[in-house]
Length: 166
Length: 411
Image (cartoon, rainbow over all chains, first blue to last red; front, side, top):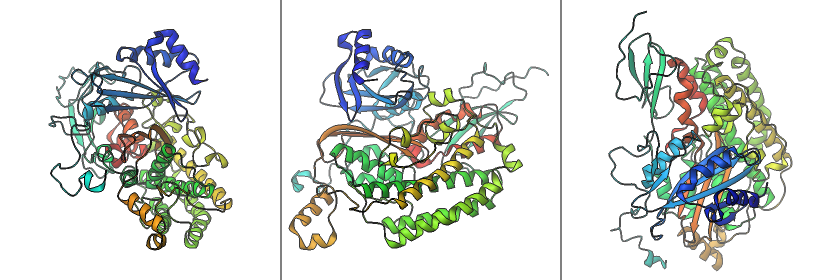
């Protein structure tokens, strides 16, 4: 099973513009798609008689503050154990309405992964059975992994990048 | 049996249509944790009990969350190794080396064969400690303390080998980008040979006491089982998945660090219950010993680290007498060296499953985004499903056999 086969099959099913930004990172196929395509695409890959992407390895949120209109992203890592092929699907949404569909209906493992992405990035997974904070405390009123929250105290003077030629 | 009014418990999202109802007794709420001696870590489970039977469980995690992924976004790559130690602290060298291999993949560093074999040895020793802890503590949780003492001294002995290789015992920070920090010392080699010679006897003794013990079998067989389909759907990996009958092992499927050179079997179970998880871990310990034996017998000659001066700290002697070494030393320690732009996913077979690192680099000195795929975090969410309909004592051994490590769960 070649990576090209996967993109061809997806483009035949969902249209040529549904799969873009196709790259390969150390043998793992990566591409970007629209938020609306996530659920049908994962169902298609899950049920496909040859591909069988039936294992959700991980789900990672990411924040690009400079990408206007698509600041928040989700990266789905799926794995076809039968073919031993991995795949990364990315999708982006604007930060003021970061709505993604939930995939808990397909993978039970997605439950806590989506809660983690919500907790740290504020990504809203529509249809999730229990979208609450998981690792941080419930009273927290911000999403700490977003880039606008610096890790260190900004008033510290011993770690200014300029002093180190950075 | 007359109809009993159900207690409306606001803490638990109770589905009254599930199996087990109508309930015999009035439902009661029981807090298992956050600190409970039998959970080996800080986990809270709010159990809804129907008499002695568990009807539902709600888990709370995050008690020791330390924001590793956020911290990693500010740290140079080599300083992140110390964060990985503190995830699955029962097998820290696997975490360290998984992270090193991820960065080497990004940087394109080729690691010499000797360093790869040394890594394999250290990783398998770590797997041994991990499984020794899990299995012997499972025996303790069922009431058998003696077997634990027999094998635990060998975990201590493996920690002495760690000390020889990196100076630390638990949070090892072992190795560097490009290979190992130091070569095997004669003491380390001697200790590994001693371990290979004497651990089998202790392991056999332990197995003789526990494996076919009637009490142990009654406590663990058909307890906390999960089918292969559900386990895959829940993202199980490692011994827990193999106990359910799926032979997915990262070492065999996507070999890294020369695992393809070694002969080993991937044991699988059939039922996915507590007893199967125990058996799979026992067999994996034998396979680990087999791998270590092959690696130490065929340990290649040559350098124990790659020639990567930008990332590998120079010899301390050179730092004092060699200008270039001094410059590199300074630049590495201060984290001045930028990594190339790229995206890498790398996974290793950790002590309890597929430990993955998803690294996004924007060309800076720190990762732009680093996501740890912690196996324990992903499979622990199946716990309520696995203990539904069982008793509290079964829940304890189920949790014990799942090898949930609090540090890894909460990053």
